[in-house]
Amino acid sequence: MVKCSFCGDVIPPATGKIFAKTDGRVLYFHGSKCEKNHRLGREGKDVKWTTTARKLRAK
Image (tube, rainbow, N blue to C red; front, side, top):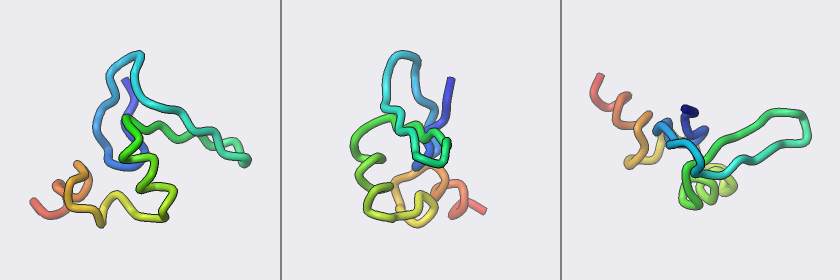
């Protein structure tokens, strides 16, 4: 199982999107919501609904 590159959720097998950058890095997204937020330049830790933001607020 792979984690989403934007929000940190676990992506179930055979779902999600893969985005390959020109420098060779591969980004995994579990849906278009995460992909669009990443393309807009947002950070996952700054968006309230992401798993990484929830973990940071809990500390």
